[in-house]
Structures are given as structure tokens and as C-alpha cells.
Image (cartoon, rainbow, N blue to C red; front, side):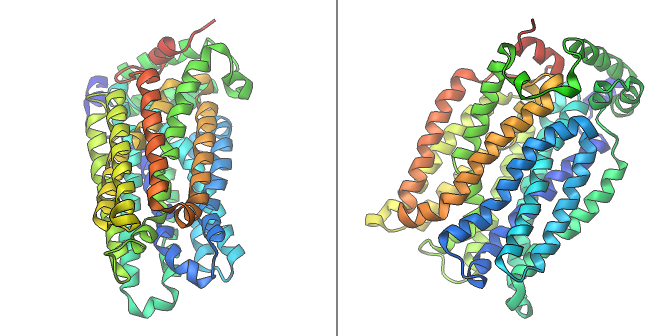
Length: 458
């Protein structure tokens, strides 16, 4: 029974539902990519105000990421996801009704709270209920739903601009539609049990056993519970972990790995590209009219989906380390191509090079750092500090994202596309060199086995 459960290619229903939180986050966050073109004109935004409108979403995501881990330890992973669904629904409704700039910012801040909650709680839950042999694939399914949500958001935006009678309020429809999947997801979470490891951390062994037996069978459940007990025996203060616990000598190695991966993922500019894609293409030569930039953005997001599927199929077969190294190297090359596209023809823009470079960049990211970071973070930290450690690394990751998105309009205006993307390429090269030295392989091992390998116990 247990063997059959672990060999299944389909995730148990709780994993599938939790992974759908990625769709919710991608859909809600990317609706603004299309709306930003119209919002800028509607509210007459300066470059700084535009950057703040986009990045304010990331600011509260940063705060939420930091709080979500400790909250997930106290009230449960599932409860944190329920809060996220409420934040997303409220954000969409406030954005659609916005009559002034502060109201729009408030909607973006609410959305960010949902993003941070999902980023921490979803991969943590999936890692804690998945079988080791399929854990990478299951966590990557969350990323797959995320990029699929991004694609559907770009498709939704494209459809909205073709509805002529909505022309005066098209951005309101673009943003307001996000309330529908958020509400549906909130109801779906009522069919999801709490994480078995969360139950075990709080002494509810029988509850943990029931969930694991239902998901994977009795034999698997007993084996996992034995390993969880052994792990928790190293530290009886599991639910009271604090920041000081992350800096003990035994955890410094894995914390450094997590921080490097978290910084490289964002400092190379992925969320700046995705957030401003429509504006990038609208400003490139060879993109006339209103609809062309939306079509190009849709193609970018579709490539994101396709290569995330490749990552899902490969991450448990060839491992985390090869994918991350190959993908980061490809990102560096693609960013150089993009920079060359902006520099072509004596400082003009070669739109085909820009488009091709960004396609390659997004493809390589989706194959590697996109899903790979969250897989690694959910694996390398021990049970007793996993939630707090993921929150801390997520805080740093989101802070870098916030800074990159905030300054991107200024960079493009004052430095130009060539220099902006050359800077991103140099960061990718530096990241590749660091990852080649420090990145471990975690494929196919239980969370407790990884703890024994990567963390030095006193």
C-alpha cells in the first residue's frame, strides 16, 4: 500500500490543492503587468511612482514572508494559506474600485501579504507531506501552477483590451477578475488536512499518522514518523525557534546556501522583466500598436510555463544541482543577448534580439532558479527551524526583488536597456560561480536524512 502510494505519478489531493496556491499568486500578481500601462496614464504617474506602484506589492510580500514562517509554526500551514486567499480576494476588489493613487497602493499592499504567505507556507506544506522520491516534482508543481497563472493573467489582459466597450475601465476589469480564483481557492482549502509534520511538532502523533497513511500508506507513515521523532529529539524547542537559532554554527552552512540561492534568484532581474514586460516591449522598435506588446508578453509567459514543465519532469531525475547550474549559465548568456539587443545599431533597439534574449532568460530561469530555490529551501533546513529559515531567506529574496522592481523604470530611463541588462548578466555570472562551489545535491533523500548530512548536530 505504501509502495504504491509513493510510486504514483499523481500528487495526493491535498498536495494538488495546496499547489494551486501558486496559480492564485501568479494570476493575481501578473494581472498588474498589463494594467500598469493604463494605470500610468490614468493617474499620471512619474517613474518613481510607477516603480512604487509595482514594488509596493513586493514590500508587503517581504513583511509577510518574514511573519508567515513563525505563524505557520504556531497556527498551521493551512491556516496561513487561508489568510492568503482572503488577502488576494480583498486586493482584487479594492484595486477594481480604486478612485485614487493611495487606494491603488492599498490594493497592491494587500496582494503582497497574500504573496508572502503563499511563498512560505505552500512549499513547506508540500515538502512535509510528499514522499522523498517525488518531493522535488511535487514542490515544482506549485511553481508550475504559478507560471500557468502568470500566463492566464497575460491572456486575460489581452482579451480585456479587445472588448471595446470596456476601454474606459479596462484596467479595472484586469485587476478585479482576480477575486474569482481567490474565492474558489479559499473554499478548496476546507478539503485540505494540516501538515503531518506540523501535527508531530505539536505532539499530535496520531493526527500526523492518519494524514500520512491516507496519503502514502501505513508502511510509509510509520517510517516517516520514526524519522520525524528522531529529528525532533535533537531540539525540544521546535515551536519556539527564533532568529538566534539560525546563526548557530551547525546551521551557518545551510543558511549561507539558502541566502546565495535566494539573492541570485532575484538580483538577476526576473521579476522586473515579468512585471514590466508589456512596457519593455511597448518601448522596443518593431512593436507598433496596442496589442503587440500584450502578445509578446503572452509568449514570454507561455515559455515560462513550458520550461517549468521541463523542470518538473527533470528535477527528480537529474537532480537539483545540474538544473540550477545549467539554468543560471543560460540566464547569463540570455541577458547578454538582451543587452546587445538594446545596444544594437548604435544605441538603438534591435527588438528581435531583445525578445529572443528575454525568451531565453525566462526559459532558463523557469528550468532552474524558479522552482529550484523553493525545492532547496524546503529540503536543506531541519524540522525545528524550517519555517523560520524559509521566512528569513524569503525576506532577503523579497527585499532584493523589491529593490530591483523599484529602480527598474529609473534604470531603463537613465542607464538604458543595454546597461541595465548587462548589470543583470554580471550578477548571473557571479551567481553561477558561487553556486558551483556551494550547491549540494538533495535529490531522493528524506528531510531527516538531509538534516543528518547537511547540519552538524552537537
